[in-house]
Image 1 (cartoon, rainbow, N blue to C red):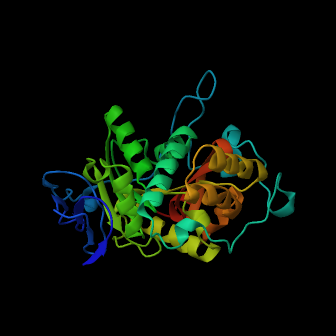
Image 2: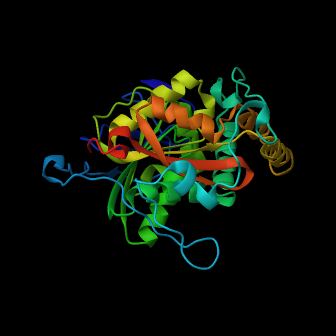
Length: 349
């Protein structure tokens, strides 16, 4: 096992068959087992039963259906259906900008494809990393990141009462926890597997949010989204937030293809659109609302590395997915839901 400096406890995360176990250690260490570790402060053992396997052979063919939700003003917006075109029927009033690329895009700026964020480098400062994850949790809660992800998942799975979700690049896992809270409030059953490729991030997440390792309905794993350690169609929906801009187009396509492989209903991408207004907002937030050096450096850099929504569409299609829903949020945030191309064209489930 490889020690990582951190909190007062250790979580040993098994695979989905063995479940997971939480126990307390007498020293401040975090050990990595099965290539994954998270610290937490629980004073007693917690044993989680492995999730009940679903017999997919006996289930009827499942595909996303229409969604109805309150419109921004009075009345209701129409359902999202697979027979509509994304540029006319699905983006609609939610997507106010005209999507162009390059210099013709309003407030355009070149994508900094080769730039490196601090989160992509050595993570040898657990306290600063934990502070950055707290900042991201506040940003997602206050600036609509959670709502965008929830609406995108609803667009694919509104017809299901029991939903399984894979969150790739989970970071502090704040969005999965928020989604679990929303599901409980609505009387729905949601099970989330949250994956990150950096064990240091998961360890810092447990320091930043001690309840995280023992959150009901949540499993934490270490793994690479470009080579997911799960069988085909293991989850209803695969979701990723603020990950795509870290990747070049080839790696992004690989990620989306893998997410599509393990998802039965489809994929939701939540990320940042680059633009001058979004960059200014990120810069102001990083310099006036936090003193964290990771947040201060990475927030405006993330905007400069972001993909326009119309640049994400061909990446999805290259990964065998067809975008069917898109919505914008404040400060450059957007979410896109996509289904398997075979479903979109009526070739199969």
